[in-house]
Length: 232
Ligand code: ADP
View 1: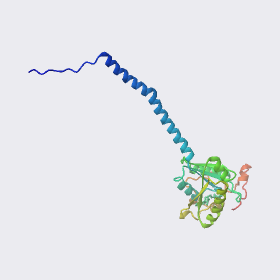
View 2: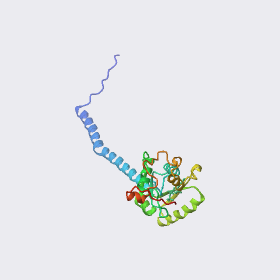
View 3: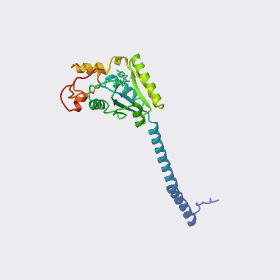
View 4: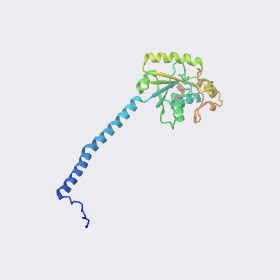
Protein backbone atom coordinates (compact mmCIF):
# COMPACT_ATOMS: atom_id res chain seq x y z
CA UNK A 1 0.00 0.00 0.00
CA UNK A 2 1.35 3.42 -0.96
CA UNK A 3 2.38 5.70 1.96
CA UNK A 4 0.43 8.95 2.35
CA UNK A 5 2.67 11.95 2.25
CA UNK A 6 1.58 14.67 4.69
CA UNK A 7 2.43 18.37 4.09
CA UNK A 8 2.64 20.89 6.93
CA UNK A 9 -0.57 22.69 7.29
CA UNK A 10 -0.55 26.07 5.60
CA UNK A 11 -1.27 28.87 8.13
CA UNK A 12 -4.04 31.20 7.20
CA UNK A 13 -3.20 34.81 6.36
CA UNK A 14 -5.00 35.93 9.49
CA UNK A 15 -2.91 33.68 11.79
CA UNK A 16 0.31 34.80 10.13
CA UNK A 17 -0.66 38.44 10.56
CA UNK A 18 -1.68 37.89 14.20
CA UNK A 19 1.64 36.20 15.07
CA UNK A 20 3.61 39.03 13.47
CA UNK A 21 1.49 41.60 15.24
CA UNK A 22 2.04 39.91 18.62
CA UNK A 23 5.81 39.72 18.09
CA UNK A 24 5.88 43.38 17.09
CA UNK A 25 3.70 44.36 20.06
CA UNK A 26 6.03 42.45 22.45
CA UNK A 27 9.08 44.25 21.07
CA UNK A 28 7.29 47.60 21.30
CA UNK A 29 6.28 46.98 24.91
CA UNK A 30 9.83 45.91 25.80
CA UNK A 31 11.29 48.93 24.08
CA UNK A 32 8.81 51.45 25.45
CA UNK A 33 8.37 50.19 29.02
CA UNK A 34 10.84 47.55 30.07
CA UNK A 35 13.94 49.08 28.48
CA UNK A 36 13.52 52.59 29.97
CA UNK A 37 12.64 50.97 33.28
CA UNK A 38 15.81 48.88 33.25
CA UNK A 39 17.85 51.89 32.18
CA UNK A 40 16.41 54.04 34.95
CA UNK A 41 17.08 51.35 37.52
CA UNK A 42 20.70 51.11 36.43
CA UNK A 43 20.99 54.90 36.59
CA UNK A 44 19.40 54.96 40.04
CA UNK A 45 21.79 52.31 41.40
CA UNK A 46 24.80 54.06 39.90
CA UNK A 47 23.82 57.36 41.55
CA UNK A 48 23.09 55.61 44.82
CA UNK A 49 26.52 53.95 44.71
CA UNK A 50 28.19 57.25 43.86
CA UNK A 51 26.46 59.12 46.71
CA UNK A 52 27.19 56.27 49.11
CA UNK A 53 30.84 56.24 48.09
CA UNK A 54 31.03 60.00 48.63
CA UNK A 55 29.43 59.80 52.05
CA UNK A 56 31.41 56.78 53.16
CA UNK A 57 34.72 58.02 51.74
CA UNK A 58 37.40 57.63 54.38
CA UNK A 59 39.24 60.93 54.45
CA UNK A 60 42.19 61.39 56.79
CA UNK A 61 43.90 64.65 57.64
CA UNK A 62 47.62 64.60 58.30
CA UNK A 63 48.26 67.87 60.11
CA UNK A 64 51.65 69.32 60.87
CA UNK A 65 53.99 72.19 60.34
CA UNK A 66 56.31 70.09 58.13
CA UNK A 67 59.19 72.50 58.56
CA UNK A 68 60.44 70.70 56.48
CA UNK A 69 58.59 67.56 55.36
CA UNK A 70 60.89 64.57 56.01
CA UNK A 71 61.13 60.93 54.94
CA UNK A 72 59.42 60.12 58.25
CA UNK A 73 56.36 62.14 57.27
CA UNK A 74 56.39 60.71 53.74
CA UNK A 75 56.51 57.14 55.02
CA UNK A 76 53.53 57.72 57.33
CA UNK A 77 51.47 59.23 54.47
CA UNK A 78 52.32 56.48 51.99
CA UNK A 79 51.49 53.72 54.47
CA UNK A 80 48.21 55.41 55.38
CA UNK A 81 47.31 55.81 51.69
CA UNK A 82 46.58 52.08 51.65
CA UNK A 83 44.17 52.44 54.56
CA UNK A 84 42.22 55.59 53.67
CA UNK A 85 40.48 56.64 50.44
CA UNK A 86 41.93 60.12 50.58
CA UNK A 87 44.61 61.86 52.61
CA UNK A 88 44.85 65.61 52.95
CA UNK A 89 48.14 66.88 54.29
CA UNK A 90 47.19 69.97 56.26
CA UNK A 91 50.05 72.39 56.51
CA UNK A 92 49.34 74.61 59.45
CA UNK A 93 50.95 76.97 61.81
CA UNK A 94 52.07 75.46 65.07
CA UNK A 95 51.50 78.19 67.66
CA UNK A 96 54.47 76.90 69.66
CA UNK A 97 56.84 76.92 66.72
CA UNK A 98 58.06 79.69 64.49
CA UNK A 99 58.46 78.37 60.96
CA UNK A 100 61.80 78.49 59.26
CA UNK A 101 60.72 77.61 55.73
CA UNK A 102 58.09 79.85 54.10
CA UNK A 103 54.61 78.36 54.08
CA UNK A 104 54.20 78.46 50.31
CA UNK A 105 57.56 76.70 49.85
CA UNK A 106 56.60 73.93 52.31
CA UNK A 107 53.33 73.41 50.46
CA UNK A 108 55.00 73.40 47.05
CA UNK A 109 57.67 70.88 48.07
CA UNK A 110 55.12 68.47 49.57
CA UNK A 111 52.90 68.78 46.46
CA UNK A 112 55.90 67.79 44.34
CA UNK A 113 56.50 64.69 46.47
CA UNK A 114 52.94 63.44 45.89
CA UNK A 115 52.51 64.82 42.42
CA UNK A 116 51.51 61.41 41.00
CA UNK A 117 49.32 60.29 43.91
CA UNK A 118 45.72 61.18 43.10
CA UNK A 119 44.43 60.40 46.57
CA UNK A 120 46.94 62.60 48.40
CA UNK A 121 46.56 66.38 48.42
CA UNK A 122 48.07 69.29 50.31
CA UNK A 123 46.14 72.19 51.82
CA UNK A 124 46.85 75.07 54.14
CA UNK A 125 44.78 75.75 57.22
CA UNK A 126 45.32 78.36 59.86
CA UNK A 127 43.18 77.28 62.77
CA UNK A 128 41.96 74.23 64.64
CA UNK A 129 42.48 70.87 62.97
CA UNK A 130 38.97 69.75 63.93
CA UNK A 131 37.49 72.76 62.12
CA UNK A 132 39.36 71.77 59.01
CA UNK A 133 38.12 68.17 59.40
CA UNK A 134 34.52 69.42 59.56
CA UNK A 135 35.07 71.63 56.53
CA UNK A 136 36.34 68.82 54.31
CA UNK A 137 34.19 66.03 55.80
CA UNK A 138 37.12 64.09 57.27
CA UNK A 139 36.55 61.70 60.16
CA UNK A 140 40.16 60.70 60.75
CA UNK A 141 43.27 62.51 61.92
CA UNK A 142 46.49 60.74 61.06
CA UNK A 143 49.54 61.09 63.30
CA UNK A 144 52.92 59.43 63.44
CA UNK A 145 54.49 58.08 66.59
CA UNK A 146 58.22 57.79 67.10
CA UNK A 147 58.73 57.55 70.84
CA UNK A 148 56.80 57.40 74.08
CA UNK A 149 57.31 61.17 74.37
CA UNK A 150 55.45 61.55 71.06
CA UNK A 151 52.71 59.34 72.44
CA UNK A 152 52.19 61.44 75.58
CA UNK A 153 52.02 64.62 73.54
CA UNK A 154 49.74 63.12 70.88
CA UNK A 155 47.45 61.46 73.42
CA UNK A 156 46.46 64.78 74.95
CA UNK A 157 45.80 66.39 71.56
CA UNK A 158 43.78 63.39 70.34
CA UNK A 159 41.63 63.31 73.46
CA UNK A 160 40.94 67.04 73.33
CA UNK A 161 40.09 66.79 69.62
CA UNK A 162 37.69 63.93 70.39
CA UNK A 163 35.94 66.09 72.97
CA UNK A 164 35.61 68.96 70.53
CA UNK A 165 34.47 66.76 67.65
CA UNK A 166 33.20 63.35 68.89
CA UNK A 167 32.92 61.91 65.35
CA UNK A 168 36.66 62.25 64.82
CA UNK A 169 39.10 59.39 65.35
CA UNK A 170 42.84 59.90 65.62
CA UNK A 171 44.77 57.08 64.00
CA UNK A 172 48.42 56.58 64.98
CA UNK A 173 50.98 54.83 62.84
CA UNK A 174 54.19 53.75 64.49
CA UNK A 175 57.23 54.93 62.57
CA UNK A 176 59.54 52.41 60.97
CA UNK A 177 62.68 51.97 63.14
CA UNK A 178 65.02 53.74 60.67
CA UNK A 179 62.88 56.88 60.84
CA UNK A 180 62.69 57.13 64.63
CA UNK A 181 65.55 59.64 64.95
CA UNK A 182 64.39 61.73 61.97
CA UNK A 183 62.71 64.94 62.95
CA UNK A 184 62.15 68.30 61.29
CA UNK A 185 64.22 70.18 63.87
CA UNK A 186 67.38 68.18 63.20
CA UNK A 187 66.87 68.25 59.43
CA UNK A 188 66.33 71.99 59.57
CA UNK A 189 69.49 72.48 61.61
CA UNK A 190 71.50 70.52 59.04
CA UNK A 191 70.11 72.67 56.22
CA UNK A 192 70.61 75.91 58.18
CA UNK A 193 74.26 75.08 58.64
CA UNK A 194 74.77 74.19 55.00
CA UNK A 195 74.93 70.40 55.52
CA UNK A 196 73.55 67.71 53.23
CA UNK A 197 70.16 66.64 54.58
CA UNK A 198 69.06 64.82 51.42
CA UNK A 199 69.05 61.38 53.07
CA UNK A 200 66.34 62.63 55.46
CA UNK A 201 64.21 64.23 52.78
CA UNK A 202 61.81 62.53 50.32
CA UNK A 203 63.55 61.37 47.16
CA UNK A 204 61.94 63.87 44.77
CA UNK A 205 62.11 66.71 47.23
CA UNK A 206 63.57 69.73 45.52
CA UNK A 207 64.49 72.85 47.38
CA UNK A 208 65.53 74.50 44.13
CA UNK A 209 66.56 78.05 44.59
CA UNK A 210 65.71 78.17 48.26
CA UNK A 211 68.21 80.15 50.23
CA UNK A 212 68.52 78.86 53.77
CA UNK A 213 68.25 81.74 56.19
CA UNK A 214 65.34 83.53 54.51
CA UNK A 215 62.50 83.35 56.97
CA UNK A 216 58.79 83.37 56.23
CA UNK A 217 58.55 86.97 57.36
CA UNK A 218 61.41 88.22 55.24
CA UNK A 219 60.01 86.35 52.17
CA UNK A 220 56.61 87.95 52.51
CA UNK A 221 58.37 91.29 52.88
CA UNK A 222 60.02 90.30 49.57
CA UNK A 223 63.46 91.29 50.71
CA UNK A 224 66.51 89.16 50.11
CA UNK A 225 68.02 89.79 53.49
CA UNK A 226 68.67 86.55 55.37
CA UNK A 227 66.77 86.51 58.64
CA UNK A 228 67.58 84.75 61.84
CA UNK A 229 65.50 81.56 61.99
CA UNK A 230 64.38 80.45 65.39
CA UNK A 231 64.96 76.92 66.63
CA UNK A 232 62.17 74.74 67.89
P1 ADP B 1 53.67 69.34 64.47
O1 ADP B 1 54.08 70.66 63.94
O2 ADP B 1 52.19 69.18 64.67
O3 ADP B 1 54.52 68.84 65.62
P2 ADP B 1 55.27 67.86 62.63
O4 ADP B 1 55.37 68.50 61.30
O5 ADP B 1 56.47 67.95 63.52
O6 ADP B 1 53.94 68.37 63.28
O7 ADP B 1 54.84 66.34 62.47
C1 ADP B 1 53.57 65.96 62.01
C2 ADP B 1 53.29 64.52 62.40
O8 ADP B 1 54.28 63.68 61.87
C3 ADP B 1 53.30 64.26 63.90
O9 ADP B 1 52.29 63.32 64.20
C4 ADP B 1 54.64 63.66 64.15
O10 ADP B 1 54.63 62.81 65.28
C5 ADP B 1 54.85 62.87 62.89
N1 ADP B 1 56.24 62.66 62.58
C6 ADP B 1 57.24 63.55 62.54
N2 ADP B 1 58.42 62.97 62.23
C7 ADP B 1 58.15 61.65 62.08
C8 ADP B 1 58.95 60.49 61.80
N3 ADP B 1 60.26 60.58 61.60
N4 ADP B 1 58.32 59.30 61.72
C9 ADP B 1 57.01 59.21 61.94
N5 ADP B 1 56.21 60.24 62.22
C10 ADP B 1 56.77 61.44 62.30
